[in-house]
Image (tube, rainbow, N blue to C red):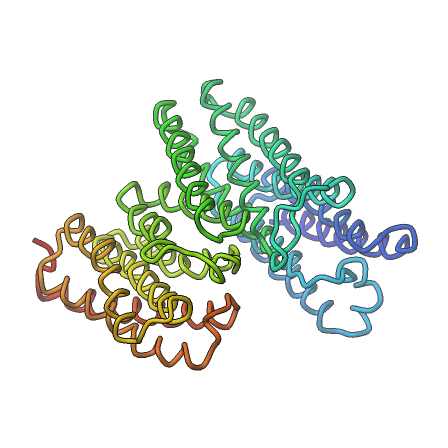
Length: 447
């Protein structure tokens, strides 16, 4: 325990020292460079944790102390405008340093093998910093739409290369994984990590990168080469499907990346049956009716993809921790995408096709039932009572949506409308799930 205490004191000393030193040389460094110096330094220190700490609780306590210090630095005006400018002097809004500490603690607590800790943290430390520096200095091709944070293809390429190396070296040196498997895993992790970085905002890549990379390693590090190539083939299929939709609709380039990322996460954690509802929503949201004119000029940013998928992804994650409710949560997962398809279709008919409310409701419900509800009825082997309840909840999204269409301008893609849709669908899905979980205690909900 004494060695852990000394290690913790040393880590806090390094953290304080690098912040003070970068502040002293602030005139020679711009805020982004100062922040990246701190990022790289603390990332390198974090890579030593498996070797200098004996107990996981020690790292948890260290993380709590570091978070308290960083939050105090943010809240105290004197410190924030003094030594804190080395870390907080950037013009953009970011909670990256907070997420950085949280992700390190979580991955350290969860890891069972040293390589499973080193790979996510090294990607966070080196790939993220390299992409930021190269993208800022040499980035010429912006992949983002005007409403999205700037992301360069040059920075993303560097991120992929560094993430590939950060995965390849530990896997090759510290595991018995075959060389072919190591290459495929490294390629897939590099691709996954680059996609995460592309769609991250406000510094949340410091949280998403380690956690999702760690989850991927846990799932794939012992998979056979056939399964790995199958996953790669599925990703190629998703890419073709998504690019086809991109050509006929109004999604942005970063929406393509976000869609691929969501699809891969769902496939890895749920399997092919779970990918059907979101894939159906994605392939059908821009047809019946086809997009044209004013609507096609309105870019669908990656925030739209996030709004349409977040409730479903939460259902999937809960099913991982509570597998006894997996069948119920799959139905709830499907319901969230059916509701979003109904909501999107109604809004499109009312705001762009200019049809009446009754016709818009009929078309919206028909589309959601035919494309998502009925396939779920078959695959989930629901009984008719559950199916009727399912359809009733999809229909229940219409009255509040009529009100929201009056309150917000649904002819534009704005954060207010996206937030309203997420809350509406999330509430309906949560209530539906609760009813099923209570009912399953008394009745068999499946055929």
